[in-house]
Image 1: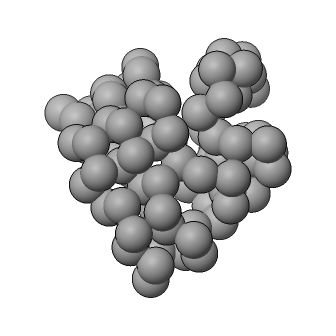
Image 2: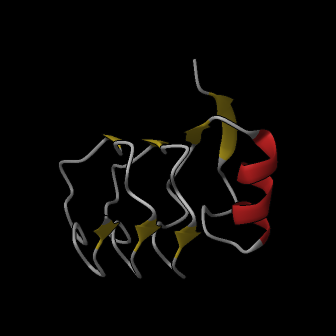
Image 3: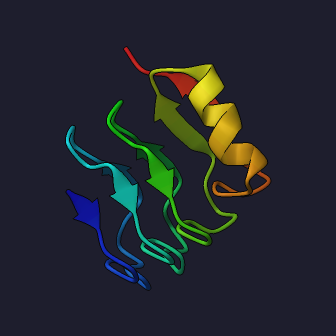
Length: 88
């Protein structure tokens, strides 16, 4: 299951998103112009995050693994302000 390109682009009402298990790909600019989006919880099933899926507004990325966070963030998928939060 994927979140398609531009799926939530410009959804200014989004402040937090919890993406359910089974989603493996987040498309290009899926959440890019969501200026109020500050926290995203990603499932362990996530395998690919396309370029510019998110913008630099993100603060908290909730994931199972710091290693997975580092791998995606090295590619610049979360933006410069993003920090890892351990999923409970």
